[in-house]
Amino acid sequence: MDRRRFWHLLSFSGWSLASLSTQAAAAGEPASPPAAPVPSKDTAEAAHLEAMNRYAALLGGPKVKVAMLVYPGMFLQDLVGPLAVFESLMNKEIHLVWKNLDPVGNERDPQPLIPVRPTTTFAQCPSDLDVLFVPGGVPGTFTVMEDPEVLRFLADKARTARYVTSVCTGSLILGAAGLLKGYRATSYWSTVDVLKDLGAIPVRERVVIDRNRITGGGVTAGIDFGLTIAALVTSKDYAQAIQLYLEYDPAPPFNAGSPDKAPPLARQFLEDMFVGMVENARHTARRAMQRLNS
Image (cartoon, rainbow, N blue to C red):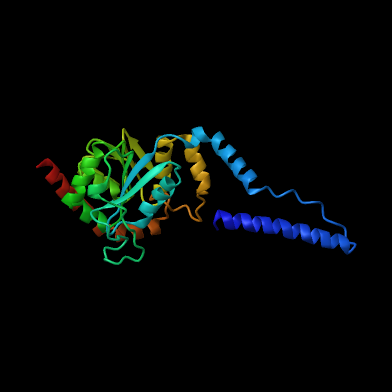
């Protein structure tokens, strides 16, 4: 609902309540206590402005520039979790970057079920980035790990980005671009150890910070990652306000969200299902390392 419609309905509801009270008194019924006066639009907007001024120090600061790689075959939650946090920043400039502006999505199909339209091409992407971000998702990750154009773009922007970041298997893409050598990093739980093949130091944590490299674990860790970034580029207070705004208060119905906590049947099922994927990840990572070392 737009503001004008909201104020119209609010004024109408105030008139209606006053009318009903008058009618009840005329019929001999006890009148309701007089309603508090409905604030005028100008009064309410002035109060809103005053409140925002009180939080100027919390909400202010320079514009935060974010470039988020999108590509065919990415996992949408890897992108959407951090994006929800970044979009909650008051002063931001967000670029969804790809080679061209054709829609991409979970599938590599030219018409994905939920299309994501890039906003910015590689050539248009600014260099003075606060955050360079790469989501994960298979099979797209493995294709991108061997795409020279994408790897050159990431290596170029990483030189000047304040933070070079990823979620899930996006860290394998950073590694293939030579951006995680000697850095502690994490990834999706089944591919964390593959980071070793890319010269990184694997760490099984939800979010890992090593200098200006920040990597998040799998899929839903993207929200934790996003809040971590928000605290770094603004403040802890602001990040906590975003967490409340998003009502991010996880209480899953099961305690099976990591290999250490999942029951044996669930873990074995996923491990068996991912055998081929992990092998593919290792082979792709080793080829990437050979190219980096050649």
